[in-house]
Length: 184
Ligand SMILES: [Zn+2]
Image (tube, rainbow, N blue to C red; front, side, top):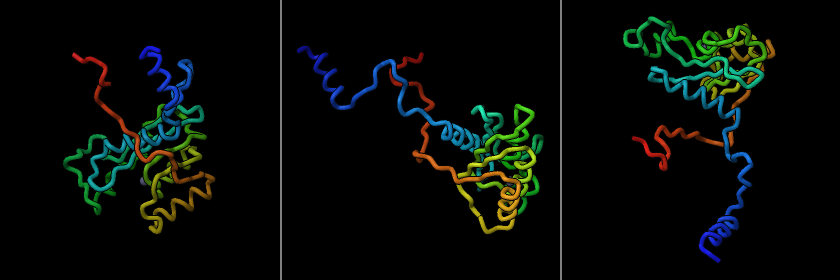
């Protein structure tokens, strides 16, 4: 028995691999992909206290809008205030930006993936846009009036909302080339 056969047999015993024609295992699920996209968008936020990302998906699993919390276009991130008492007057929330950034006209039946449970103002936009499902990771202040109002409106308008669940705690994105690729 030569060494190649032996190695092949050993690796076969240790971890049975699917045949080469089979699809790859461990690929990103749709839901993780969409929430991951929302979280990646949140990384663009300049808010020092709260970075929120949102991703809207249609019924064909196509991403149709992405947004994060930020100052309106033309309002400088450097001159407008980011402190908790004043930013509320200026900042566009992630959900609002995702809805306004949409690349299709009608969001009817779409699903929104957002890191934080939407406020009442965003809930209004979600309802009016036709989005029917919201996945969120956390609800930071469920007892605050804005979130109580948000839930009340979403429920009344039959927009489902649900805490996002995943098998994974993290998705790692490596920006460097694979080790076996020679980059010149
Ligand atoms: Zn909001």
